[in-house]
Image 1 (tube, helix red, strand yellow):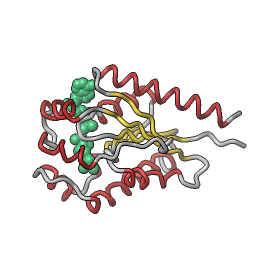
Image 2 (cartoon, rainbow, N blue to C red; image 1 turned 180 degrees about the horizontal axis):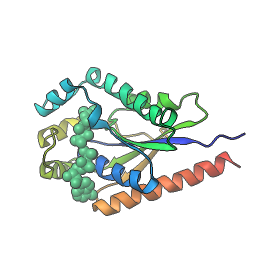
Image 3 (cartoon, rainbow, N blue to C red; image 1 turned 90 degrees about the vertical axis):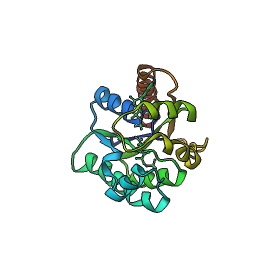
Image 4 (cartoon, rainbow, N blue to C red; image 1 turned 90 degrees about the horizontal axis):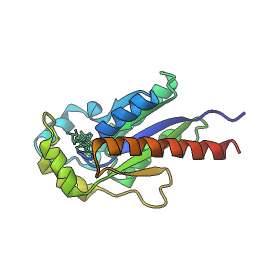
Length: 189
Ligand SMILES: Nc1ncnc2c1ncn2[C@@H]1O[C@H](COP(=O)(O)OP(=O)(O)O)[C@@H](O)[C@H]1O
Ligand SMILES: O=C(O)[C@H](O)[C@@H](O)[C@H](O)[C@H](O)COP(=O)(O)O
């Protein structure tokens, strides 16, 4: 029997590109639980970022493991049909840490929704955002660290988020639904 896939949708991209804005929308429209990656940083990471110091790989490994485990728990313990997670996942090796969740599983499927925007635009959004520890001075370091998904990362959907909030949200939702349609069509052929 062909098992119904449960998707972990990772909404990724540099700070300020619109991950939370789009993830909350996807969560609402798809009726799936939402995990805000920023809520799972250890305190020392938050303090570092709030002081304008970019995280290192070492700062991020444990956080990535935690997010992957939280996502899997939503599907297994929580019995959700899928979930939406925000995490910058700036480097390919970070995405690989998350990909482990789907490795060897007949049910858990990890897919990334990469929000593409240029540095200038993101800087403007972060500068205007209030009440967040991640300040505008950190944006450049995010783009230095960023390894955009490559063509062979076939589990990535790219969404241009240079338009309005609403355009980005609907574009992401349409791409996710199209992707599921195509992928599930192939699975049941
Ligand atoms: N398409 C958009 N146009 C203008 N502002 C946006 C857009 N998407 C998000 N924002 C705003 O930009 C800021 C950063 O968005 P946010 O969702 O917090 O990004 P992230 O979660 O990637 O850090 C927020 O203040 C948000 O309201
Ligand atoms: O909303 C934001 O501004 C981002 O999500 C931000 O908080 C940050 O990008 C990560 O949580 C830190 O991790 P990285 O340094 O790995 O992006």
